[in-house]
Image (cartoon, rainbow, N blue to C red; front, side, top):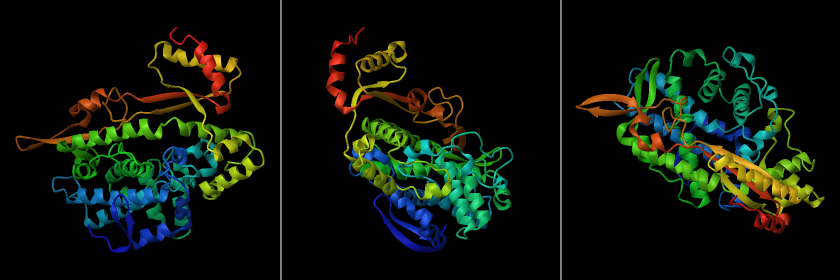
Length: 443
């Protein structure tokens, strides 16, 4: 589907990215431009120095891939979108690409690291009439997704995006948002749009795996993007079209999942960043820096990596020990990295080690990281998850089947990555080594 291009952006991952005049107007807004100052991977750059790419680059990539994937679905003669009016599909494409461009607009400094400092969700809520009945969030911590919805609402209030269009963008990003009458009339077409932005085949993870792999200088996140996009299709569902995968593309999908699995093990769950996240928490707890958001969205918009780094530099110069450890890149010493639940006694060894170090006066702390590489229903024991179908040809007839049933990888190899790290501060490393030498770790 043709798009009147306003600007062309050169991207190291996807080559040329074309934006419409409306998309360029959204991109140029200061609230979106601030994503230039939010690193995609937070403290990971302390391990992989090239990983200084930002959320804006990723957002452009997701916008681009969303349009590319949708164009393929429109061209699929065997797909389930053929019954929709071209004007409807043009609008759906526009909403989808803007959802991709804005899906991370609510991130604060250090991306996901800041999420634990957001506080309660109430200051980050949309007007009540934007939510579906019973879906207004309350009594839980805020998440960056809440901030993202509020940014999109603000763009509508300032006239950058029409209000109905902003509602539909939010509805694509969050199932609890009330769609405009225009999108509501089209039934589950919105389900296809949601699946493309946030699902087992979403363009969000497709972009971040390739982008993060590139800037980290590793090959763990490489997969066959072209083949995977070519294998996308739509099938008739009970309430309208659903996203599916052509049977010949299952190996490309498995490649995506393995790339994600290896990137979590080798990059996202590297031993060093969790310790610096702990330092940041301690710097806040000790009052060395402020990292709170009582005013809601405006505080998030004012919170950029450079602002927090500036505060850390000031605190370190004034004697803040936690800020100094961050600014001077003083890693903690890893004592143990253990897959939770795999050791006999449910990881009793790490408890023994932690207690022994603590009794010896070592400053010891633990961090925990957990991720399942797919939540696809039927994959490796997942009982409640996204149901994704595949298609294949049997004697010339198109047969639809649950995708998880066609892959040994999905059936057998979906154990959660569940890791616990035990650290001591660098000054206690020698003492900790002596404690471990005395401890009978085989007992």
